[in-house]
Structure formats: C-alpha cells, structure tokens
Image (cartoon, rainbow, N blue to C red; front, side):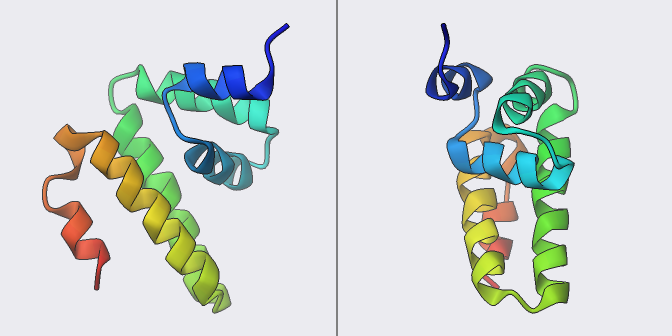
Length: 96
C-alpha cells in the first residue's frame, strides 16, 4: 500500500506545494497530490499552479497574515525554480 510520502513523490511537487494546493482547493493531501500530478503533466498546468499559489499569497495579504505571505512566497519561489522554463524573471520579482 502506498503512503502519503510515496504519493507526494510521484506527484512531481514538493510537500509544501501539495499543502498549498490542498488548502486552496479544500481537499485532502492525497487528492492534492493527484491534482499536482495532473497539473505538472498537462499543458498549462505549471502556470495554473503558479496562479493558485499567487492567489493564496493575495488572500494572506488581505488577511494581514504576514507570516503566511512570507511562507507562500518561499513556496512559490522554490516551485518556480524547479520549473525553470516558466519562471524567467519571476523569482526576482518576489523579493520585493
């Protein structure tokens, strides 16, 4: 039987990206792993994941949750660095 770590490993995303998906989509980590796998392996999926994380950042900013904003910006930065063809110049803009 597969454990959550196995499923996360097959998704192509880090645990923190899967957590962001789970929170955004209001689903379990297992379902979020499947969503991550589908996004990573589909045309337009990586930009869609980027938008999800950016929306989560905006929501945290609107709530004044600066700790969550900082955490999610780090999640987004690390995600984009693993998806190099999509981040061209984006990571630097997150520092501001």
